Length: 117
Image (cartoon, rainbow, N blue to C red; front, top):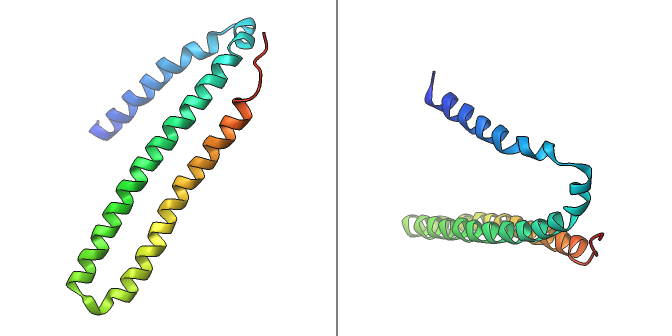
């Protein structure tokens, strides 16, 4: 058995073990847990935005570093490298903006609703 297959199997087992209690809830607990869902949706959106911003900044810094190194090695290709760099930075930043929009949508949809009592 390869290590990748074993690792995948273990991750699937852990996912099934942690997901099985989710199906054991009662209907009354589900109605009461609506406030919990709202709270965790907002917290999850915040963490998603933080992770997206962190890795987006990391990706942008690596792209800029590689572009500067490429221009330093071949100054005659600076125009093409600069164009590709700007396109890459725009695409990286758009992913972060998408996560921001999804986070704001979750906040405004779930954040201002009153949970049932």
